[in-house]
Length: 152
Image (cartoon, rainbow, N blue to C red):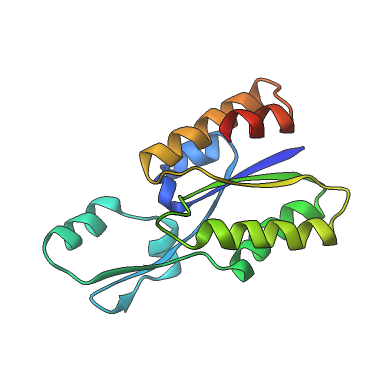
């Protein structure tokens, strides 16, 4: 089986991620120095976040690091899944590089599994549309290689 992952930058509504069985790896963030709780990160309120930004709040995000990637991806790999991570542009976040490094490390640990970390060169809707395209391809029987070639 193939498991598709993205990050919260894709801004996928939870219902859509669930419908397409997409794993979403969370970015952490703070507003005016107050770290978001795990629940707030999981159920990201874009309107609240962007309104705070518009109103001059100090908004900061933290990239997804290799440890967090490993935590999420390892669970699927242990189940025997191949992994396609489709994430935020490396031009605006170190997350793409962390995903690539984690994919390389996990490939050594799980040599029988296929793992791809794709930099979408986008964020938000541009990233999310690529993730949905990949999920729809998977649902329609596309192979790992067909999906990764298309999205790359």
